[in-house]
Amino acid sequence: MTGHAPLGQHVDPRDVLATDSLLSDEERLLRDTVRQFVGDRILPEVGEWFDAGTFPAEMAKEFGSLGLLGMHLEGYGCAGTSATAYGLACLELEAGDSGARSFVSVQGSLAMFPIWAFGSEEQKQRWLPGMAAGELIGCFGLTESDSGSDPSSMRTTARRDGDDWVLNGSKMWITNGSIADVAVVWARTDPEGPDGGAVRGFVVPTDTAGFAAPEIHRKVSLRASVTSELVLDDVRLPADAVLPGVSGMRGPLSCLNEARFGISFGAVGAARACYEAALEYSLDRHQFDQPIAGFQLTQRKLVEMMVSVQRGTLVALHLGRMKDAGTLATQQVSFGKMDNVRMALEVAREARSVLGANGITTEYPVIRHMNNLESVYTYEGTNEIHTLILGHAITGIPAFQ
Image (cartoon, rainbow, N blue to C red; front, side, top):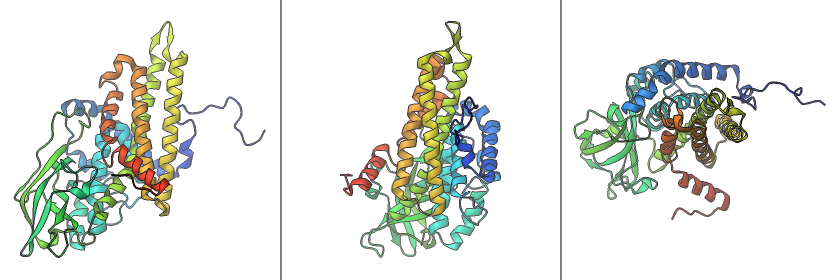
């Protein structure tokens, strides 16, 4: 026969479909560089970060030195890589921990992107080079306690007072909030004002009077990540603090779409880490005088995990190629975010069962990933919201209410 590999040819148990062959040499080099960084700097420490409920802010400069912050943006000290390369970096970072990927994702896709896409030249020059270097940390303020899946119902307000803007309100579940130097905050303007009650974005230095960012504690998910509330109490900003290039919900939603793209890759990294941990453990763990990998039920679990990870990898790479070609639709990003995160959570739970009681300790990465993925399943658009986005796409009927 032609067109087939010889019978018995070895396949890589970590990449059975040889998806690595779909990457260019440059993409593999970048991927390998990030993978080594994760192995050297994150994996040896992340269990302790998770246990302590902390993420060291000094990691920002290390991410910056690798060119990972705003890496898919052009100019202003940003690396200007392809979307696929950014996705691959997210995959490797989340194979370390969702907190590491969240930091890079929030910095680049949620804080830097709106300044880059909608900011004035003065705003870009002031903030982006320092953020790309990791010398300045950013956060993104959209979600509120009573405004999650329906961000247009936000209560945070921005009113004009002479030439200034005055912001009042609060934001919730904000990654990096307590360690940020700058916050991109979305607020609704005065319905009687010139903006007619539109949602506008504001670049808020976190040392501005009236701004506070108390950290949220007692989390059992995303513990190696800083999560905060933002409180805005008569925060007075100059006229040029508003992002001039966008008005309405298109602004924050476009930022979320950037972040969701990275999550489509990142979730695959978490799933891969869980699968590989289960595979290694099953080969080392002996019961009834043989490795548990030799039992039929265990092999079935391993195969299901492997197939899921490989399928998720192909979905992510396809989305990356479409984004680089300029053909990626919002609904297709929802496909990747919804299905790859759901897949990763299922893989993590299956991997935990292979590890047995050992699977519940942070000596192994599985329970940490499983807990983290419960947050990833919800943030940047819940699984339910992405389901309804796709339902609208295929039926033409919106079912959000």
